[in-house]
Amino acid sequence: MRQTLASCRQLLGIAWRQHRGRTITAVVLMLAGAVAAPLGALALRSATNAVLAGRTREAAVAGVLVAVAAIAALTFGHFAHIAYYELSELSVLDLDRQLIELANGSGGTGHHERPEFVDAITLVRQDVQRFNTALQSLLSLGGLALAMGLTTVLLARLNPVLLLLLPLAVPPLLAGRRAEEVLERAKLATAERSRVAMGLFRITADPAPGKELRVFRLRDEVLRRHRAIWTEVTGRLFRAHLHGTALRAAGQLLFAVGYLGGLLLVVREAVAGRRTVGDVTLSIALAAQVSLQVATAVTLLTDLHRMSGTLRRLGQLRTMVAATDGPEPDHRAPDRLRRGIELVGVSFTYPGAHRPSLSGVDLTLPAGSTVAVIGENGAGKTSLVKLLCGFHRPDAGRILVDGTDLRRIPPQQWQARIAAGFQDFVRFEFTAREAVGVGDLPRIDSTPAVLAALERARAVDLLDRLDGGLETRLGGGHPEGTDLSGGQWQKLALGRAFMREQPLLQVLDEPTAALDPQAEHALFERYAEHAARSGRRTGAITLLVSHRFSTARTADLIVVVADGRIAEVGEHDALIARGGLYAELYRIQAAAYS
Image (tube, rainbow, N blue to C red; front, side, top):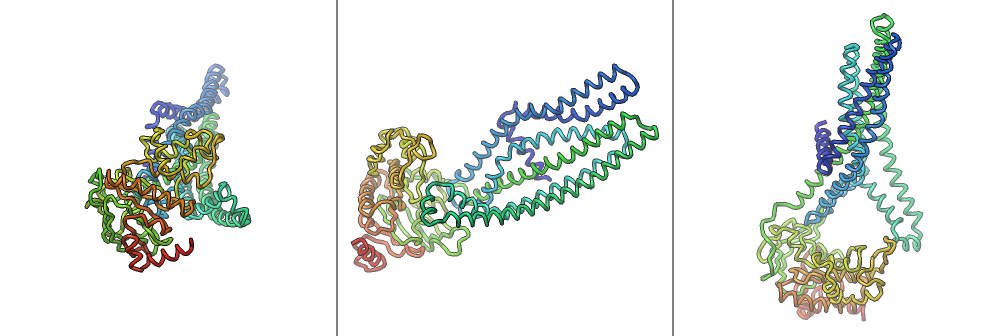
């Protein structure tokens, strides 16, 4: 219950931050609408007694009061809805912002590798749209509390025994909370399977997989798997809902017995002449209101308890990200590299993995050098890049930047001095100018800078195929958008990688998979020229990651990665002369291309 109350304060605080005036308006209207019903019941008693006594004027006034109370009870909630609807929309945007910051505000990406983080953020994304309901429930609960207080006073004046209806309201509330806990456990247990099902749905809904679905006739197989998973998930959730419904019904039944007993008590007193007909009318109205209030409270508390779980998960997400980030950095990123980057005894294992991706890595990357990282798929090349970019922190060992541990440098500062092109590049559906310019955000609108980056990436010819040139809207998701081939998207990604002119670390992590070996070699030669200029200006280290060994020949240093370890380090000719792993793999690949 404390968690739910804390969540209520948090919900109200979120709404207050968005718009104080609308929050006050919504609260006042909800409170006024809530107390109208008990006051209307009181006016109804007066009207009944006045009619039976023949007091026409008094009956007319009481009747007007009943009508006014009824109108207030029906309409004030609607006007409050107008106020809190926009509040809830603004608050949902605020929660979305918090989610985006949690997912991407950290310099590292280690939390994305943790299944519990993925499960929690999936559930929060599903539930955050219910904020509208939760805010309404909170405001309604405030009004309901005031109405129940007034109802309690009126019941006590009728007969103190009727106050027993109030403690009888506790079992339904407890049963509702218990039912929500049952459902919450079921949702958490099915989160991973739900993600799998949503992934299968995306395969069928996104256009890119459509070709393979048709060629391999996978539609029915994907549908079968999707149906099987959802049957499993919905079956478990249905059983949880059934269990919860039984608990709520048991609590409501207990209250219904007390409700009936209270009515019979008042009727008996009226028959004995100790109560008026108006008192009977009032007791019936109040008992009906208590019944409705209890049922409403159960529903409202269920909604709030559910949102409490969402806000609790939001706090857990913050804790996970903070744990991944580690201690607060206390050292600025250097303006230029003088010695280079050194890895000392570095080991790294992905969360949940049973074997390390890198183990005992000792490696020196001299300032101003061009380094080719070579190895077969799964050797650990990309893991090495992630560590150097500060996306992950090593489990053991240190990464030293000019002698300073990379942990001591704020990751956002370090990443601001990195230029990178990745194999799994993003297809930004912006204008062509923006899709390239985001590689150096302060210069996103600079036409000369964007054209220079495309020139370095040998991608200027792409503009000739775009009707609007740099202002062409990209992506089939826009009515006026132009969809591109995989190779064209890749050229834009390479352009982004060339936008920053003074990085300290330049990375090309196999971003040229769609290019043939000759085109890749020509691009890397161009990149090496740019790297040499950057090296002279800032001591930048250029890292070329590829599984094509012919690319490595132009590098100052070749690093061969095998089974998570550094197998060999040296120049091309020296490694060939050594006759080790590099020489063997080079000859095999050269023979394949000959």
